[in-house]
Length: 242
Image (tube, rainbow, N blue to C red; front, side):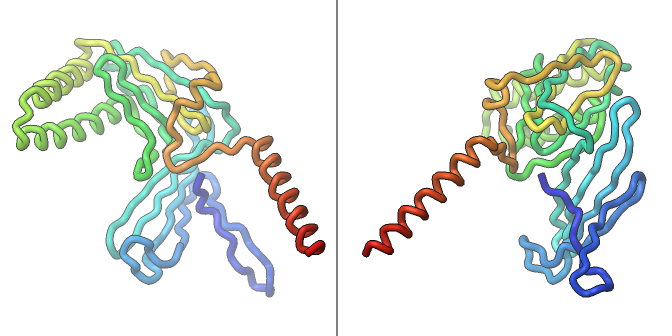
């Protein structure tokens, strides 16, 4: 998980000061050169900590290049939360206001329309509500529909139209929709009166995409380090004998 808390040199030589935003404060941090366009000192991180009622503190972080416009965002829950699956059944317009906290490692599934939003290298975190998620999916579908239309793929266009219509029906309270979000790192959630949640099983965790992140098993890490130490020790012994 990228945290834009940076260590800056203080007034005294060698003194390090950790910079973190307080609750409600917006912190802007210079990250140096942009890796995309090469702009000098154009990359900045903006982080904002705020509290979501009945849930806890979250930090929204955004990296922006002032030169080329590169942007990447993420959300992190600032409390220790286990890997969970959250589910809500959207049946009327009020359910559309269910809050959605999605980090880069969160997978969103819209069951009835067969849509799954999985983490990827370029995925972003966000805080919105169910209606906001539907709007994001709608915009993506419209772009995909136009592309398929230009290719002459009538079947794909028809399927996109069906999903788009279903989304409109859900927003008007005419059809139900089951919304799920799962996060192996515990940094995503649904928040609302009708939300149900449970712990993810180890098998479910293994099947989920982590996007840009990686889970490291401490036991495997320790075993790997011990193996490396043994290999170095054996090499050193061999060198002495030679």
